[in-house]
Length: 241
Image (cartoon, rainbow, N blue to C red; front, side, top):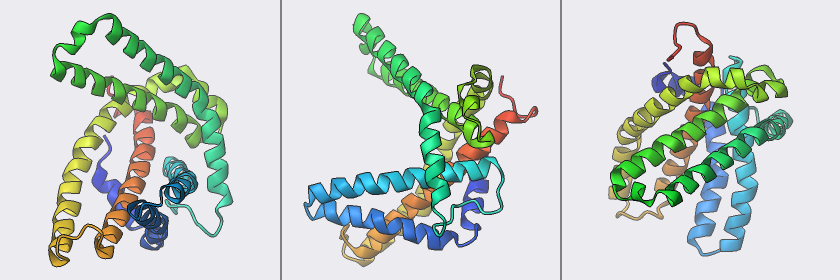
């Protein structure tokens, strides 16, 4: 089972890690300020452009993690590779995205056919979260087959996906618990102190900088966690069932 502490260490100790995190935080800070200033069109445009950049960084980090490359985070001096990875990952994801859409429509149909499922809200939301976890796990179990080997047809191999699926379900469930605890320790208290020192002003630059850098850091930790989960799924000693 993957430990988030190992992923935090991998990201934090990577070469030029905090320089890269700071660079990635800049567009996020720009998006926050344009949104808060009411420039909705510019904010939406920035979100689309920077969303593509963040997706490229995310999937390239997963690829590097799967392959245990010496440098975990991609180099911005040679960005072509990460955009190639993004393009092929989109192709690899097409079948699993279609399957996920069909499964979600089936879930909605089941709820519409049996409205009594909504009578107990707690049971419904738990069921929904479990179903959502299944869809997310299925997505990552599929695309990491490509990101690991670089072969598109591996992402379409149902036997490999099913073999990895149980490990992804369990590890992602554990991840939610671990990242919640990590956020409480590493974000809530420092953020509260920063706000207290700046008159509880959420628009304070230092607070926004800290928040954006923490979000990027967590984003990269999650990417490494996915890559480590892929390797974990292949270990004969870590099979769930």
